[in-house]
Length: 135
Image (tube, rainbow, N blue to C red; front, side, top):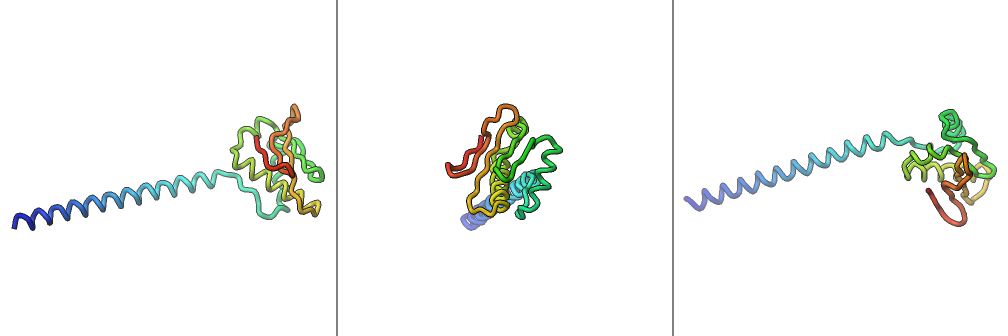
């Protein structure tokens, strides 16, 4: 009788520990999903349809982020402080979407894009035959 009582208590402890562990995992998982959702919605997304890039570049010009954009030469001149404030993923997204836009506009298969700083003309990002570089 004593051994069966001890085994029942041990089984209850094991089940209680298992339930607490499962609830903890679910709680942490839900917390991560909520965190990831808010992180995703706070990122400015560029359109998949590149025809909308003219409107986005125009809005960036009114914000003061973009100084000039030449799609024929694939050169974007930006405010250096505004460029540095953006996250690396955003910079990569901007560079690739604009390179894609310029290539489609020129009806070319090669993507190339250069992002220059407004004041000193230094290269902040580049995509071309030499590779991909983002500062």
